[in-house]
Length: 129
Ligand code: 5GP
Image (cartoon, rainbow, N blue to C red):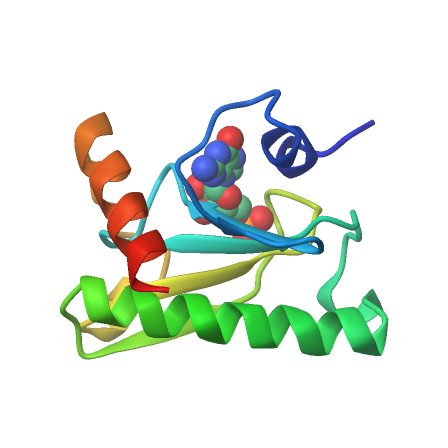
């Protein structure tokens, strides 16, 4: 069965899209740790990060770096943190999270954003690429 992220990539489930190329897709996390929390996903559906082939793994990091640089231009923060977990969604994804404190990367404190705010941030990151 297709993962929820495959359904997002194919447009079956809506998202706040940030960027896309032939192999990767970036969109805002629906339950963000911080404003601008972005997920970067390979279109190829693989469960675990280190099961990716070397080329896809390297390109995922390259693509994530570009998104992180754009994200940092848009969301003022101390730095962008990166995390790969996958305990909830078994389809590889990189979390890019604007950080100001250690707790921002701990997935305990969440922020709620209005739909317009999600839309605005996704657009700003996309334009900063
Ligand atoms: P993980 O698998 O790394 O533990 O967490 C999965 C992440 O995906 C969570 O941060 C969660 O909020 C996010 N997520 C789960 N389902 C959806 C969805 O349908 N849309 C979006 N945008 N994010 C989702």
